[in-house]
Amino acid sequence: MSARSFVPLVVVLSACLAGCGGSSSQGTPSPDPPAKQTYSLTVALSGSGSVSSAPAGLDCGATCSASFAQGTSVTLTAMAASGTNFSGWGGACSGSKTACTLSITAVMNVTATFAAQVAANTCTQVSQYGVTFSFDQAYPCGTFANGDYWVTPASAGGHVNVTAITPVFTGTQNGFQINPTDVVNQGFDSEAAHFDATLVPTLPHAASAGESIVKAISLPANSTTGVRLKTAAVLTVLGSIPPDNGATVFRPP
Image (cartoon, rainbow, N blue to C red; front, side, top):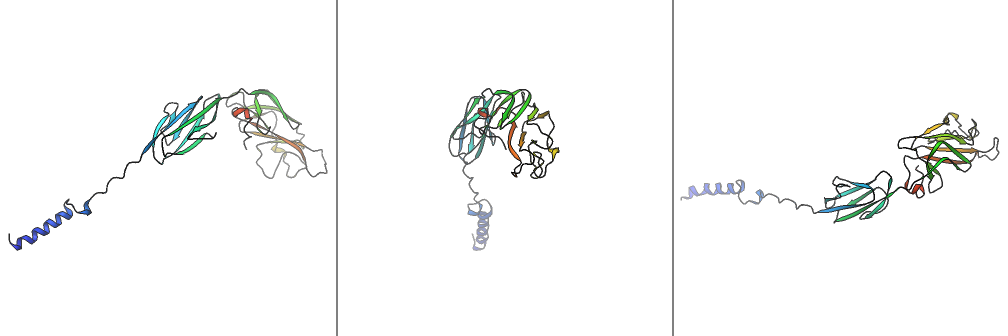
């Protein structure tokens, strides 16, 4: 082979190594990243209820174990069955809130405990601080940890019919309001500032779950103390019987 024909051959071979799939470093593909380790998360139930996960994977009762990639944030949510309350978590979760968030770093086991509701008392009226709330029939009732009363409808989605509240509202004294939110006007006593009698509901009143009835007892008219209210009591209507019949929980805000 002559020197004249050798030079083009070298050029062709060099170009092919660079662009024709040769062993040039510029054409080497990057390796795939290693797959993340996965770990199982298993839930055991004690009592009647269920637990679901976000992201999806667990739906216990039916599916109580699932695998998640290392580092995944998983939120478990407990739901009590009818007639039970969620008591708390065990294992990798703790506390009594219905939601628990875990970061998956290893195999994890969780226990969710549910307890049967204790039958509540029933009341046709309740009294506190000299205030009496009367109802048209007996309803499930009890007290919160601070002594305030709660009451629930006789059936889910129903109402509590409040027929009377004493001492009676005179039109100017001993007023009451439901879920008062007005920071200026009030319907409790006419000798206090910004009195508005239209804020006082008429009776009987069909109270729904989520309502708190705040009832005041006024001091005698023309009192010189500068304070117009002697005391007040709160009755809260709930949608269901609270855990421990309310003995370990406080009235919702």
